[in-house]
Image (cartoon, rainbow, N blue to C red; front, side, top):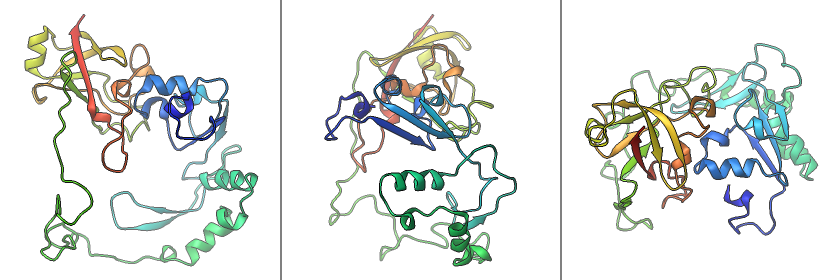
Amino acid sequence: ARVVNGDRNEWPVAPRVLVIQGANPAVTSVDQVAMLEALSREEVFTVLHEQVMTDTAVYADVVLPATSHFEINDVVGSYGSYTAQANNKVIDRVGESKSNGEVAEALALALGFSREEFDASTEAVNQLVADSLCSGSIVVREPGATIQFRDTFPTFGDRKMKLWREDHHLPGPRFVPLEDERHPLTLISPATTFTINSMFGDTAPPPAVVKVSIADARERGISDGQLVEVTNSRATIRIPAEVDGAMRAGVCSIPKGLWRRSVAGGLTANAFAPDTYSDLSDGACFNDARVEIRAL
């Protein structure tokens, strides 16, 4: 958002085109207010490649229809296990939909790259399957035989997990307090069983509530189901409270994956998150959000 808004001088020229694929930054980006401002800029031409009408699609100048996994042959890696496999299409293309690879190939050719580097044709995908184990099957480990610290161990000589090593270039973990007297509560945005990031947030969203501990609710005169105001220096939203005995005092939560339609005013938990970088790999700091809550 800072780059598009011109607040960060990391690029030699101001961006004029924004291409978004496989993302819904209108609700998944930190500092949501700044991101919505960036998506609203008239001088930046925004292209979205998407399957459904997301909150981000509302801001796009052009929406390119994307295929689902039902429409294309592909090779896919799993998320959290040990397999790669062929994905065989089961229906014809819907309308003029294109795959991620096809859009990337077309864009690469327009920018002067060679077709061989970005070939996403059906023939290329089928050849990849034919040249790999994806055309058959292989048992990497027998079911139930991949339990960490019983069957598999870290590769260090003592087979122990290391949080820090003297010979490593990264410093050890350290605690950095988020002191903010005006906003004493830490807001977290945990995942739920309802959505995957923001996917399915349009059809089966999690409950749009802020969970508050019993102690914090009592201190602020908040009752279960009451409308409250959550605020910090970046945003303010109104949302029902859920007094939760499992919440730790000083911590509150709004679920990850909500769309703008789920919350009055159109802002979600990410509106409170800073756009600072983490000290490891420049990650986002979603859970460094500090807020205050008051009863209405």
